[in-house]
Length: 514
Image (cartoon, rainbow, N blue to C red):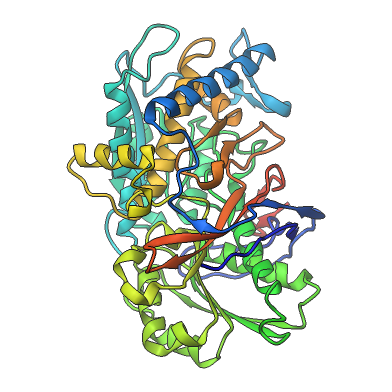
C-alpha cells in the first residue's frame, strides 16, 4: 500500500475558469481563471483502505448524532430570526442570504407539491442510453425514502406526517428531453421540488425553476454555476466542484514532476458537453497559472455523449505517450476507457490514470478485473457501499437492505444517490421543524444552513452551506486508487477545503464566472 500525505496543497482557485457554451453538439472555451489567492488544505496523514468505518458504530448512534445536528441547525435559524417575513414577502438566512418572495409569479404557492400525507419530488435523470447507470441515483433515493417514510421521519411542527414520493422520468442524459420533462413535473404533477442530473440539463432548467421559485435541490453536477446563492437562490450545489477537482489533478501531477523527470504530459478524453468543458477549462486555466506551466503539456480528445465507442480517441491519446491520463466523462464511456487502456498499453505505460468523480460513481471498477487496478480518482469523498470493505459500516449495511427491500440491486451510481437522498431527507426534516412547518422556502433555508455529518462521506467530512458566504455543500475529497487485491479504493489522502471555494455568478453569454 502506498502512503502519501497531501499536506499544505497550494491551490489557485479555478472556479471562475471558462467552460463551454452552447449545447451538447459543440463546445468552445474562452476566458480565464481569476485567482482568489492561495489556500492551504488540511489532509489525512496516512493512507488506508476506503472501507474503514470512521463514524458511529450503529444506526441508532448515527440517528442520535443526526438528531443533535438537525436540532443545532434549527436553533441557529431561530436564534437569528431567519425565515419568512411576517408579510410573506421575503426569506432571510445566513450571511445576508435573501429571497424576494414577492417576485415569485402570481399564484405561486410555498406549499405546492404537498398534501397532508405526501411530498412530491420530481426527478428527470438518465435511465436509458450511455448514461443509463445514473438511473441508480433515483432508485437509491426511492429506497432511502421508503425507509424514512416507514419511520414517520417527515412529521413537521404542525403535526402532519408525510411520505416522500419520487416522480422519476427518463431524460437519457439529453438536455433537450429534460426541459419538457421538467415542464411536465412542475405544471402537471405540480411537484414540491425538482432534482436534475448532469450539467447540461441543470444549466438549461435552472433559470426557469428560479423564476418560478421552485427548489432545485442537489443537482447531480459539480458545475461551478450552481454556487450562486444571490442570483439563483433556489438551486443548491451538491458534489465537489469540478473546478476544484481539476485543480487537484494539476497539483497531483506537479508534486510528481521530479519523479517523471521534470517534464510531463497530461492527456484527457472529455465528453462534449458543459460537464466535460468545465473540467477542461478549469484544468487549462490552472496549468496556465502554474509555475510549472512550461514543464507540463496538456492535450485532449472529445467524444459525444452518445458515442458507442472510445477506441479511436484512446488510440490517438496513447500514441502521444502521456504521463497522466484523465477520463473527463461519465457513464459507460468510463468503463470503456479502462478496458481500452488495458488493450492499447496505457495501463502499463501511463504512470497515473484518473477517473473523474463522475466516472467513479458510474463505473463498476470491481467488475473490470485487473484492467482497473491502479486507476486513481479525486473521488468526491464518496464511500462505495457495494464492496466488502464496508461490511462493518452500519449505514452501508442498512442501505443495502433498503435497496433490496424495493427489489433493486445496488450498483455504482447508488452511492451518489444515497448521498443526495440522505442530504435531502435531513433538509426536509429540518425544514419541518421551522416556523410554519415544511414549505419550499423553509427547505431552501434548511439546506442553505445545513452543517451535518453525511454517512456516505469518508473521513468524517461534512455537508455544509452558510447562506451567501459559502454556497458549496461539499469541499473535501479523497484522492484514492483502486486495488484489485483489496477490492477497495485505497485512500492516499483526504483534502478538506472548507469555505475555500468562491461563489460563482455564472455568465451564460461568456460561459464563465463573473
